Each structure stands twice: as structure tokens, then as C-alpha cells.
Image (cartoon, rainbow, N blue to C red; front, side, top):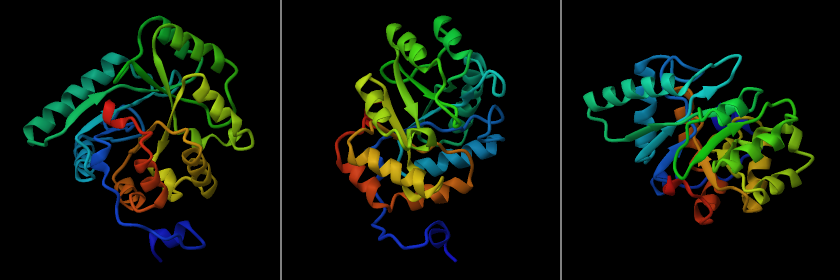
Length: 249
């Protein structure tokens, strides 16, 4: 049974693989070895980066998790790891521009990091953050106010994966109206996380609410999923929409 058949009970017509080189930049990935749930070794990192290069990307902004109780990554830890990967890419003559920021979990320590100037940004002062998967955190509004009042431009990671918003779809429009950019995952468009997640990602695209798309790449197994995701109609629709800003990063 094919991977596609396992994911879906009824078949969806696939297209030719989309050309991801038009995106230029992939951001939201976990490629620095040994500091979160992504790449665990330098060999992992290089294999994942080679996979993204093969998909057409010219630049990668990798974003390790920052969580106060689990992945206590600091700018120093992230930048140190980045430098080691950059050196290995140079040694292996792999032609890719690699930068790093972070994926900040909206926990009790995130606002302290913001006020202390400890957040890593990318592009035009963007900050990538994620929410808990259980419920909307009570300090969400305050954190967004703090971010924006200090000149940061927030990007919400994989909004299509937060089940507590599925019956409150207007929340997504409220984020956009408030100046929060929405970044969906490539693999959401082929049902990797769940059929419901796929439907929500498609609805976000139909409503014109998606500004960025990212691989959220963690491991080698996901490279095949990313290749498959390039065949799905909604990726083609999103690429043709003119809404995406990946190439500006």
C-alpha cells in the first residue's frame, strides 16, 4: 500500500511536482544537531539540508525550539550550533545560505525574553512563535502587544494544527487583522498531521490568510513527505496566489 493510500481513504488527484525554487527561502525547520527534537547529529543536519536544496531552496532559516521547561535554547546556543553547521556546509561545498532564528513556545518565559531583548529575529524583524496544542494561552494578547510595541513582527507557526480554533475559524482572521502573519506547514497540505488539519490549511488558503509556508522539517523520513506534498493542488494554488512572502526573507 502506498504512502498516499495509507493517508487517505479516497484518492485525490495529484499534479506535477510544484517548483519550490519560487519560494527561494524555507524557514521553520529543526536542523541544528542535538538541541531539540530535530536533527540529532551533524550527519542528520547535512542530509536534511541537502534534501531542501534538492527541493529548490536557495536559503534556509532554521528555527530550533525554545521552551522554558524543555528546550532551553538561548541565542548563544543556537548561534554556536549554526556556526558548526555552516562550517560543515563549507567543507562539503554545499551551496546554500543557512541562517538561524527560533521557534518560540508561548510559555511564561517568552514575554521575559522579549523584554530582555533575547529573541532571535529574521527577515524584516520577524519572530516565529507557536502556541500550546491544548488551548489558547491566557497571555496571548499581552504577548502580541509586547512584541508589536517593541517593533517585532509576529508569525504564528502552523495555525492549522491548533484544534481549539477549528470551531472558531474567525480567530484566524482576527490574527491577520491584528498584524500577525500565518505560516502553514507544507506537510499539512498532504494530510500528514490529520485530515482535519489538511482541511483547515486549505480553508486558510481559500480565505487568503496565509503569508508564509515552511517545511517544519525534523527528520529524514519527512523529506519524502515534502516531495509528495509538492504534488497537492492546494500548494499549487498557494504558490500561484501571490500571497506568499518567503522570497522576501
